[in-house]
Amino acid sequence: MHSRRSFMKRSLATAAAAAVASPGSAAQSSSPGGTAAESVPMRVSVMAYSFHGLLRQGRIDIFGLLETFKYRYHLHAADLWNGFLESTEEDYLKKIRDALDERELVVPNLACDGCTIWVENPAQRERNYQDALAYLKAAEILGARFVRFDAGGPRITDRRREWTDEEFDHIVKRYREYAQYAHDNGFKAGSESHWGPEAWWPSMEKLCKAVDHPGFAICCHISGWTGTQEEKDLADRECVPWVAHTHIPWNITDGPLVEKMNNLRNGGYQGYYSVEHHTGRNEYAEVAIQLSKVRAVLQSWRTGGSGAPSTISRSRRARSAAERR
View: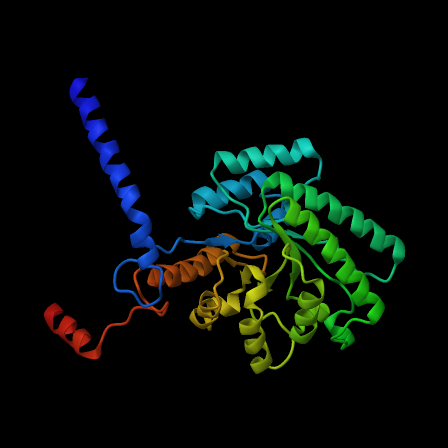
């Protein structure tokens, strides 16, 4: 018994000494291109909408979703979508918060559909506003770091990339109100670049500058912008100062992932890199593929790399082949 106590005391002393020494080394290794293992946390998550197919089939609920995040994918974050929430009643939300805390999951984002700020029908606009207020309270209870509400306005098919003055003024007013509530309660609120005028970077930039509030931010749905590829790439780079969260679709994880993640990192982004799957099919397996690619970039950064996949030289491949003969 005495030897076990002595061992524990020595172990705790060693851990404490390491904890004191670690801040300086972590700060030193945080710059890109280092040779030692960097202190880059694995800020990776999965957008809950990725499992909308399973939800529609009745094969998963919010509590099963949290189990999936924690134990199937070994995540430390839950990127939530209000499609999984059965209500905004406080008792129900507190059960979810308890499940989050039990699993040690943070909530980097709560994406709220059905709360679009501008719709043509005034009665529906008011209902959406009341729903948004309820979800702001829900975000506070759940401990969300960012909550997303769509700005609204014309769909992309309307071929109108800008809001009217009436639409814009109303949208700015509401975002300022939401941002103030978020700021007062320790999180941020804002828009996402995935449909309507907010997917056209000049309109989104105008919105960000008009709201001009420390509680306002955006979710960058990477390359979800409208325009030419060059315009989309420019938007992905220029939006970074306002970005609090990201959604990374399949075509990006299967394409220019390293470039897009480095855009965010080089711009000082400190949020989560969250994958989003859209097909509604083979969700568990295909989300795992997306996650593995994002994790590979983060691991490369952690060990001083650029994010690009590891490669083997031609001469080394030849030597390996010769050794196997």
